[in-house]
Image (spheres, rainbow, N blue to C red):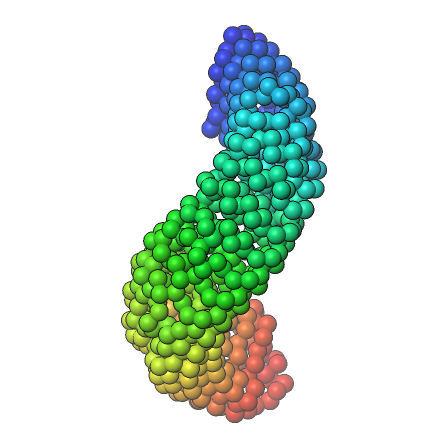
Length: 513
């Protein structure tokens, strides 16, 4: 690159983006005094950003993202008074953000992206001088200190994202003047204090992401009056109180408030938007019924209500969700039966309803959810036999039906579940021999059939489970000697065969394993 640069002194636009260029950016780049746009995005460039870049005073765009650039951002960048767009993201830049980047009041920068580097120290207050700045991305660095209140000078900010840093302190009161904000993300920092009530001023706010910090106090009632919010993420904080029942959720697509200390009922309008895709309220203290709007919320893709005190008839309060991929209702007080509705969710990969008060038989139509990867129905009051229709769940990797009142034998049809890695039927009333096809589960790591009424002998086919790490057959009626083939289980770490009718020399048992 360096060899031909001097001969291109009249060049105004240089775009080498999305190639396989390697090596360093040559010092001679500073000789291109007429250059207006420099685009080197997504290559394999290494080394430092040359200080000579400050000589190209006509530059309006510097796009160097997606390379392997190292070292400090040169202070000379402050010489570039015509800059409109700067993107140095996705490199390996270190050191502080140079204050010179905002010391020229005539700077016209509208877009500044320094994200996904290794930048350190505090956010310079001089960025507040960038009065034309609309987009500021500083996320995924190692920035620390508090947010300087002087940033309010960039009062036309539309998108402000500083997540995944080490930022401390509160949201400055001066931020009440950011009336044009559409996105504000402080996710994964060490910020604290309340959510300010001046969020009501953010009439254009579409995304508020304060997750994984130390914010405390209630959700301000003013937030409930928002009409355009699309994404709300308040997860993993110390927030308390109830969700404003008058919260207008007409545009909501993502509603995430888990791992807090919220209580009360879920808002009745939580699914009224018709656009809700992700709903996570797990690990709080919510109680009461599921909002009626939930049953017909066909846009849902991912739902977590687990770890609360919610009640209601699971057979009636939940409908058919054509886009649903993941749902966890565990550790609540739901009752009713495992209905056929779940078998009509064509994209469902994970269904978790453990530790509730479910009763009755498992619907045979659950076998229609052929994309299921994990099924957790543990610790309920389910009765009857394991449905033979489970043979259709060929993608199943985790099957947990333990701690119920299931009876009968393990259906031979389950022999088709070749992808099983974890299989737990413990604490039921299952009978008969342990099927020989159990040895065909070549990927099985965990097998727990304890506390049932299995009898006869331990099948030698278990020895074929070359990846088995944990085997629990305790508290059954198994008899006879240990199969000598068990010595082939080289990965076995936990073995529990207690409370059976096994016999033979204990010395020979240890010799075999």
